[in-house]
Length: 272
Ligand code: NAD
Figure (cartoon, rainbow, N blue to C red):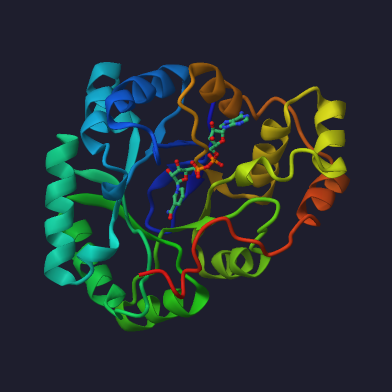
């Protein structure tokens, strides 16, 4: 169903999960229930998505044991700083109805405010206290990662970054490999902009899979974790059915060559 990646803190991460950005709060419990029933074991949430309550409800309604599911949430930009980060986790756990989170990420580094090291120190302590199992970051560039490591000695377990065929992130992926950080791709489908390219369309025709499945399989071949979003049960199932076909090295290379460096989201240096 889904494979497991080792994290640098001794824990593991399901390689495939599903994301909840823009999932309406009143549909979130259903989407979570359907995702878990389909076989997903990682849910990517965030305080700013406004649907943590539904995430917790869906998790409880699934009937799965708590330890069977990796739940991620993220500290939003207005909660940087040691005390604010701790308060942000308290508030997220209260909304989720959980006493511990599996993955806590800094949502954006917000370098202009220069507080992400303080936030990280709070997360290191929260992990030591057992309220968070694994800690990581999102949208961090290499200088931000290096600074966290230099100032705290603690390397993030994962960095969740925008990554899709138009934004292959080769340099950051290589840096992650050197540092022992798992790359988790957000907007992995890249708004479908590569679906009609010969690289994707030909691989889809050869394998009999959809362009979305080909693009998601490409991420897995690169060793990345993925968190595609779909509110439909059929979409959730399609995005999880990725392990029973392979892309050839030439197909992987052709999709990797679609890189234009084009982001769909904000520049992490500027976003605050
Ligand atoms: P995505 O790449 O998952 O694409 C979602 C869109 O593609 C939706 O419109 C969906 O209906 C459509 N889709 C899904 N499955 C499809 C399929 N099989 N065929 C065709 N279309 C399909 O984009 P996303 O939601 O932006 O990103 C995924 C998750 O990443 C988010 O839900 C969120 O959890 C996370 N995320 C994180 C950040 C961050 O800053 N850390 C930013 C954006 C998203």
